[in-house]
Image (cartoon, rainbow, N blue to C red; front, side, top):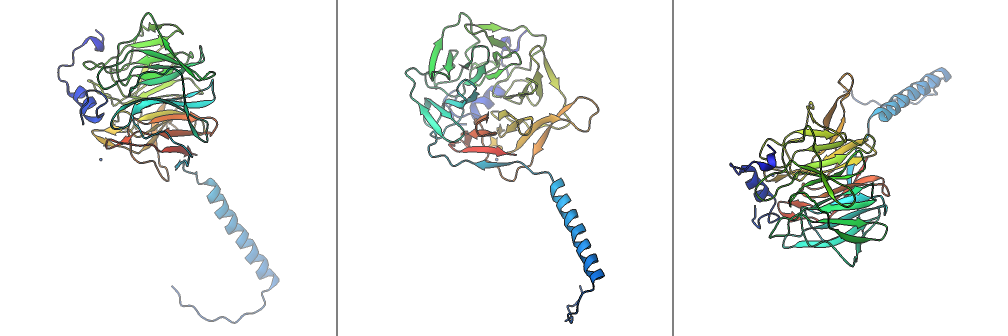
Amino acid sequence: MLMSDRKDRSGQCADLLVRYCPRLFLNRRFDSMPVHEVKSRPMKQTQFRNFSLGCCVVALIISSATAAAPRSPTWVQLSVPISPPARSYLAMTYDPASGKVIMFGGFDGTGYLNDTWTFDGTRWSRVQAPVSPPARAASQMAYDATTQKVVLFGGYNGTRYLGDTWLWDGKTSRWTHATPAHHPTAVTSPMLFTDPNGHADVYGGFNGRFYQNSMWQWTGSDWNQLSLPMVPYARASAAVGVNDITGEVVLFGGLADINPVNTWTYDGTNWTLQFPRTQPQWVYAGSAAFDRNLKAVVLFGGGSGGIDQNTTWEWIQNPTWEGAGFTWKQVLTAQSPPAREGAGMAYDPSLGHVIIFGGQNSEVPLGDTWELVP
């Protein structure tokens, strides 16, 4: 029996979803020797040569030590001339068709938004599209390489859960309302990602009563439900990143009826439950993206029991294991964005860094943009 078919009897995790994601779901609110005078005298040539050699050796040692010390990545806040209004639970991804990061919607603390913005590595620009998806928060989107369009699905508009599909064409800067014959259950906070085959896939979400564990693939005109031997436990608000080198999808955390503090990977055919030696604490609505500089999927922030986080983690090959094996490693950055959940994250090739925008800290919407500098 699918988890989506099972009734949430305890309601504990459903309460968490409502309590810690304010008004996005059910419109409810929810941490020595003394110094002596020495007479100067000429230094002999041998003494000078030995002194010079010693200085060179010391300089080489210091230089080698400095070169050997790894440089820690750090977050740097970007100073942009124009920025989108503060918001949380927005949808954001990189669009190769336009060569820009695209961001849509979200919640500004009082209402739901339906504006579209792009980021070109230097500035944010609002797109005045003739048609736009209705206002919402907690929707998600991903680039579909087979159709060269960004696919947006799901969300919540303050009164109901949404199951509509919208397509963004980065070449024309236009939205199109798709009318597929089939579609996933209307949910908030689903996980959308580009799978290793280039398709946009949607997994999970919360429909107001149940957490979902069904998985669907966009064909270009319709949603096709996938029948897989194993899928992650039903959940919503998990962090998802895709390794651009291997194509592997990495999923962590979220809100669920069954323990969501686990890591899953997807190779385009099978989901695999991973057993890393270390992993982040439980978070929901964290942000993830692949960092080409670190060559790893990076996870930042998220909420944890009502307390927003600001830690940075990377999913890397474990150097202590023989053969294959991956684990989470905390990235100790010199500085960090303020703690937040529900932010957007994407790798921006124009900038050459991962960027993060928005989110909320203690239910206060944020409108800052940060880059992760290696």
